[in-house]
Image (cartoon, rainbow, N blue to C red; front, top):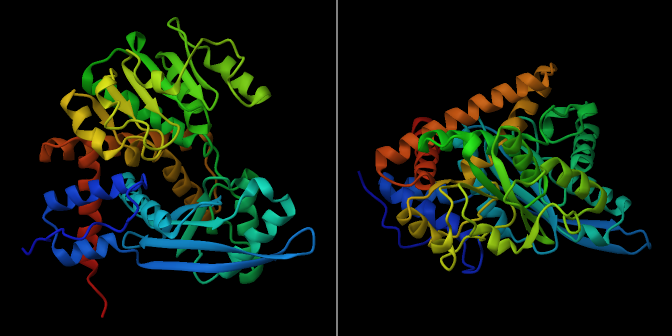
Length: 427
């Protein structure tokens, strides 16, 4: 078999781009799999990149033109799937990396989707609701040849929500002259959303945390945990872990970290944030920094905030036995060998936070069937699939004698590569 000579790195040029870490790991996994050069080139290259201009009339009567992107990384396993984010600093390179991330995440979760990502370069904080709706609808109209329940299925992401998904669904439906709920996921329940979708990522984090604890023989009643980040993923993760018996001794958000050796009252913290938006002033624990939270003497650490929180500089100070990555890319690639040398079991992001895309898949299935499941059925099926994914990744890591992170990439890349070979190249 001809193997690749990996001289040209996967496509991210910006050395400060946090997603470069993901592509570096892709290269290592590809080397271990001894991928043929042609397959390697195919898997690192998006199958489609679309850039559109979005002219709208602002509330003051002036016309402004925004830029929108949609990158389909791979669709060998099925229709492409991935979020749409609104932010002033998004780039096409970022969309490429995130789309690739989705390909591997869907492959690991064993759901029949490929990976995609999209976005509009705008600042939602400076736009009115009417302007946001105009941007969303024009973006959707420009993507009519891309989106579709059998082609490419968007979902919420940074600065987008259920309402934005509802606008996309309605705009697409108006153009195809029928109500097509399956064109997006993450919709409001009243128009085809799924029960359990909002909590899905946090619930998946909880499931794989317990799977990892079982591998190390940790008793939940004697296990301490810290959660960095208290948004949707962090707060749900902390709540579910606490309900299952873990002592959550620290949580944090943008206002800083809070530590209580007797355990944080997570429900009290959630109620406080609902009223005050941040944890500051809640009195739930002693103030610490987000950096100090990472270095606490605990059993389980859940980084669920931002990317590149654990780096080559602070990895040696991490004392947790298990790290479960609720956020995308919280660990820089330079930290990997340090964590490995300390014997820390890291459950990587492309496995740990795949609960969201798994329940998005459930939503798509329910929309296609026109039959909706109970919350118990959604949660039961999510937990079963997360357990299966965890076991598959763990076994792959053991087979190749590598970390769970590299095991995840090897498992994902191998599946997509084998699918490509079976399907063949159309010429």
